[in-house]
Length: 222
Image 1 (cartoon, rainbow, N blue to C red):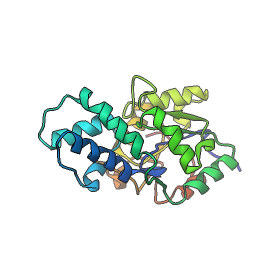
Image 2: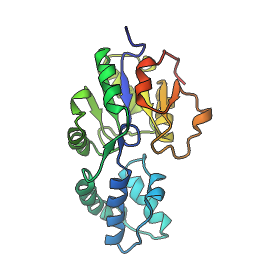
Image 3: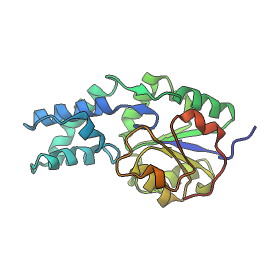
Image 4: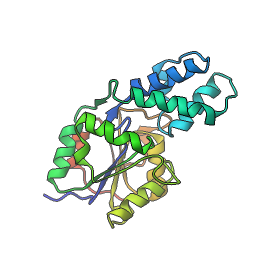
């Protein structure tokens, strides 16, 4: 059996890993440090996906404060590192799906907006680091999702046409990145799909469980 996509690129937070509680805790510790009130995890869910600076910026804006982000970000990064391995969990089906794709000799990559230095420790902690041939973080390139440049970069690394590969994500940020790159995308119904109309998205598939991935047929880019 051969797989129709010669490369599968995964988003991380919200697609492979449920890390919302840890990200929310890091953000809330930062808010407390600068004299702002904690916010519910459900609210933080709506801010995840565009990178850590944008995450903090949205929280500060929601509080109606004007704060020098450059001064706050080092504090946030301390808490982010401290909370990184606090309680992350792989979503159901992740281990099996990765194993099935690897058994089909499909190389796997990660394209995330999480700072690159924090990705390997998280993958190691969750026992899936060896599954990925390449990991691209939000600060690995000058551009990050929703730019399509990270996806184009990954496809070029494997010497593959971008429209032949598959992106797997959960958010509008992922969707826009795939659209910009011209890469087909499969979307998951769980995760943090802020602002994304899953029922009307132009996706290869919208799935409830990553174990559905190995059975996908090839579909043209969005």
